[in-house]
Amino acid sequence: MSNTLQAIRGMNDILPEQTPVWQFVEDTLRAVLAAYGYREIRMPVVEKTELFKRSIGEVTDIVEKEMYTFTDRNGDSLTLRPEGTASCVRACIQHGLINNQVQRLWYTGPMFRHERPQKGRYRQFYQVGVEVFGLEGPDIDAELLIMTARLWKRLGLRDLVLQLNSLGTVEARAAFKGALVEYLQAHFEQLDADSQRRLETNPLRILDSKNPDVQALLGDAPRLSDYIDEDSKAHFDALLALLDAAGVDYEINPRLVRGLDYYGRTVFEWVTDQLGAQGTVCAGGRYDALVDYLGGKATPAVGFAMGLERLIALLENQQAVFPDSAPHLYLVAMGDTAQREGLLMAERLRDALPWLRIQTHCGGGSFKSQFKKADRSGARYALVIGEDEVARGEAGIKPLRDRGEQQSVAFTDLAGYFAETLSDNTTRRVSDGR
Ligand code: HAM
Image (cartoon, rainbow, N blue to C red):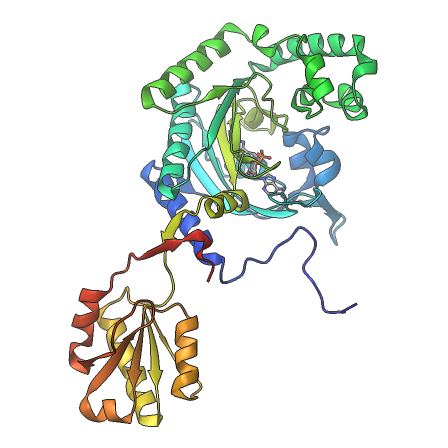
């Protein structure tokens, strides 16, 4: 067995071949969020363990089994953030961002959960999260969903289904929970071990069970929708009307409860059947009680987070198109004089055309080996200079992607030539894999 060090299981390197797609997703997200007036906030990756216990809930899977928790040198219990909502609320309270103010915020970065790694499920994964504070009406819930629908369109993604539910107020949910527990206790023997355990700890999560027998049993169980208070119902109906008006399709899923304790009223997930078991790409909802619970002034709040690995896997699946970041030109130069002239010429071209991507060959070598590297770089053209070209004041331009003869263009005309023949918005398919 080799003793070279490897990355930790479930924590991935994102290699240079993959980063252009990541940048495309991140740039598109940033542009869409800016178009709706959302501002970025950056929080630390490590927080006090207590923050997550209090906000996500002591008996959730995340807090019970999945957190990377350690004691630091001062003896404090700290945790690598498993999600961003708790930190965002903490930061907003700490810096007085939500005293009678509306905030529309977003963040991005790695999150950490000690789950069993599989396709689409990692121990370090990236989220873009969005949180809105200070608005309680259904209009902001609708804005978030309309904005995500626009994002899918901008990314070129298809076949994402929006599932929606309302959990009602904390009181309504408690009444429903009581009725559900009573029903399931009467059928305790028919539950699987996991659901039996959940009946003690977090009974609502039994609704999420993938076991068909448990699902069959739930067919006759009390329904959350029968316990929802009138205000929550009106809120949900108004949200549906806004989505209808905006042409955003949805499915109501009465079993959708979400795995974190802080939600109330609207909850939603964008799901796909194209990623196997890990089909939830984006998820969130209202958490109107959390700010108060964490010590801030009671403030309504709603948000969501999306998993970037899953978004990117879906882009690959659907062969979406994204901007090509390969160099436009690869400069091939033979001999010391040509090498020096080439370097200066590349600088002049970058001055004239700031969007142009030129990779200059360094390290010498034969024309043949330089052309091989030019080809591998993905460049559209090789720009060729030898001693003869320098003497004539001309460069050779050889197409690398299409058929076509090599042409000669005077050094002084090169910028004009490329301004006409190239542009900064060429695209390629995600699955082209270079
Ligand atoms: P969540 O449902 O735990 O919600 O995660 C949101 C998204 O992050 C998931 O839908 C999925 O795309 C991605 N994700 C979660 N765990 C993993 C994993 N182990 N590997 C890869 N991707 C993963 C939250 O985190 C809430 N903070 C969302 C929110 C914001 N609610 C209100 N505001």
